[in-house]
Length: 246
Ligand SMILES: [Zn+2]
Ligand SMILES: [Zn+2]
Image (tube, rainbow, N blue to C red; front, side, top):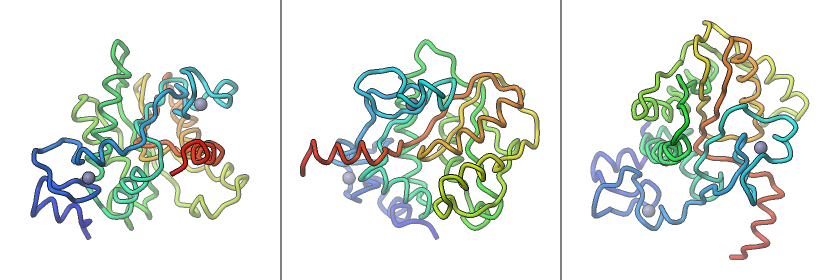
């Protein structure tokens, strides 16, 4: 079933994707000015995993083992309205939320790649066949499609498949690490040196690490990671709530 905002979009095309207020003029981000201003953007951050930092560079974890050897590009912190947008995209089949998130991703990608080579292809993180069948679409691919179109970069959606396994939140940290190592299977060789993995949200980075292993084994040299949002460790969220009381 299409989401409420998608139905509203058919009846009243220029409604804000978050608060449903009618907008006076069309915005490609599909947000009113209030919801636009309320989004929590990532400012200075780790270049390899987008963890917010007080200055540009690598976080302590990526100093030892960088999440990717290319760039991590993510516009939003995974809190408040961003969580709503991701939820709408992931579980409510809300294409408008996907359009909002991909437009925000495109803005920051254009800035971050000024003077740098764009990836040669995009790899949306695949779902297992069972989850793809159940959901009917892959939210990572819904984000990758407009990005690929705008930047003229092909998407690879059949080169890697994902085995079905128990939901990650149901596993212990140890079991999750083991499961992720065997999650992805290479179906066709990838003949590109520089690729970008595309996903909706970066949490622990386990999925990216598992996918990167497969890609490096296939001969890929440089891997970037593009997500709509970055989950923050509890320590950062706790610090934020103390520093900025409501
Ligand atoms: Zn709004
Ligand atoms: Zn990092």
